[in-house]
Image 1 (cartoon, one colour):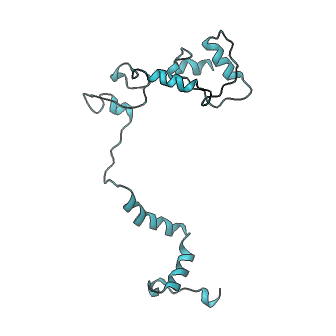
Image 2: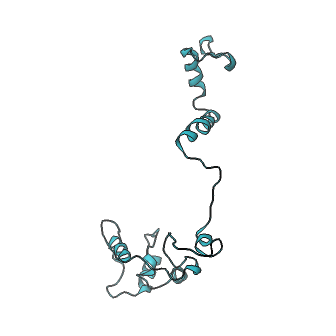
Image 3: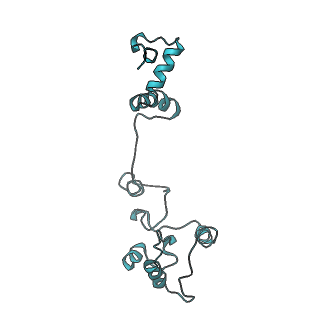
Length: 157
């Protein structure tokens, strides 16, 4: 490069010399190592909370008696997959109606008319499995529509 493009070695670089700092900045600002150092040493400590120790456990560990002999509450996605120690999953009153209301709004869910007017659960699953448009998801809130468990629906498909 030209003589004007050179910068001083870092130990001779003066922070008060804007020209030198500008050249160093242009050369180093997109280097992976520099960015990593900057965010690790300055950005993350200032803008994120850090803990010395992180405790973690899965739902099975927290909801069962593996860790705690007595639980007074458990929050998570309600389904039949909750730890058996917790017993049957009961939805909050009205939540199933809200789910069905959302899933039947045409502004949210788009479903071509593939199902006969007098349908059975098997008809829904068969239509989804054989339709040429290749659905990416089958949303059946807690098997309320099909009457099948998740395992039964997957086995049918």
